[in-house]
Length: 80
Image 1 (cartoon, one colour):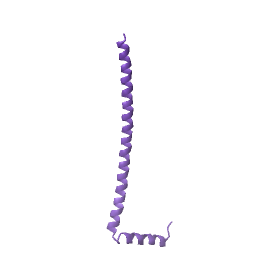
Image 2 (spheres, rainbow, N blue to C red):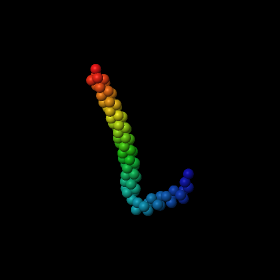
Image 3 (cartoon, one colour):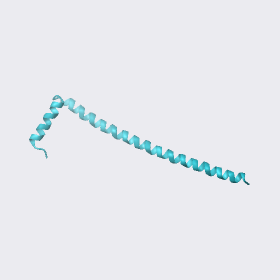
Image 4 (cartoon, one colour):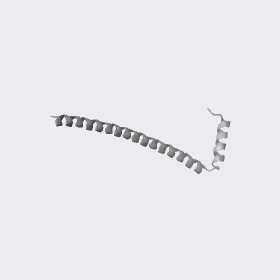
């Protein structure tokens, strides 16, 4: 755990960086939290899109296989 001197040094840095403005500090923390939440949502959207893309590829492959099977059956019928 941090010592009192370490905590005071950290507090001094924060005060200096935010011009001793608690509102600015709170806003900065809120923005960081919201940006992290946004990044999580964007990541989820990318994962959903990747899953959908994989499903589309599988669907396309199934459709091609089905079309080939239908062509083979039609050829058998035409050969009768």
